[in-house]
Image (cartoon, rainbow, N blue to C red):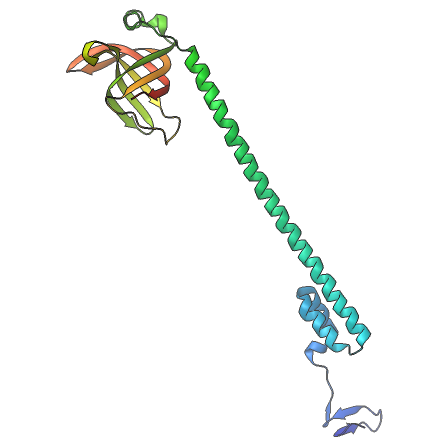
Length: 222
């Protein structure tokens, strides 16, 4: 018989110190099941504590082990999928970059090969006959202006004695890349582009007409 117990005369129910024995909150099965769902380590621990039998506790321990292994495998699978996705994206970006460079180089080679050399005087004399034609010039920059990635140049394309350059053309050019080198005054450059008629400019205070070219590619020689 339990010490300090009081029994009901009619039903024999036992009271502890005059108070009815009650279960603690963590001994409530509903609470334990909820904890198993929300945070299984705590839920399984309470379930293990509520069942003193060794066989039941062994089953609970196995359940904890298998549940832990299950969640670890899920986390590992998700991590491997993320790594695979990142690797795949990087490989695509690398492939695209590798493909773009040869394409750009081959496009430039084809364009350069299509450009021809024309007489400065013939272009100036009959500009309509040459408009839209792909042309090539090499010359010395006598003026360079930049604005918003666009470059406007005046280039002398006929080399005379004592490295004196004459015969000015007007060049408009848009950079292919923001890291492309700037074109400066006195640079010697190669120009590949389409002839675009005549441009009226002011040089030494006098207006004059010069051939205009929309450059597609410009290479700095020196």
